[in-house]
Image (cartoon, rainbow, N blue to C red; front, top):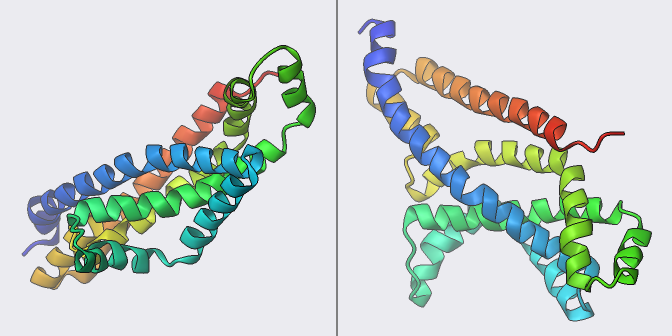
Length: 218
């Protein structure tokens, strides 16, 4: 089979289906990762001592557990205690737990970089603690953590390929199936790599535009 015809007629249609699944994994994971990560970061900085311990334990556990092992536990392990998850749901949950743990560290560092006087000033103006955190601290912290969050988003794009290990046929999984069927490993994985490179490049450009958009003049 001519390589060009193979890529256009066979490989790209198959990879398109896998790409849709990959984008679905990312779309479900990224927002919840940032949301939970922000909550954990706030808990570690401003929470009561028990909340701080729980938040620290969350980060320690999910940062220290290999993502692949976490996926195996969620998909293969939970059925033994009566909890069965679909491959896609197990993958999304695993990615969210891992992603949020790392996101929380970026956001926590950004929170720590904001002068404490701003928190005190907010309280002096009659704002509640939660209002100060929501309207004064978090907006600044999220701006400052954009580079770190984007870096984690790039990692999410790449480690989404691990979903294939729990039978989710995403981009890499679709490529693996085509390569095995037609014995076209070089051509297939080269195209798969270019697709990942394209996704990362688009993310990097988008992050640069976002930083410029939310930058505070001066």
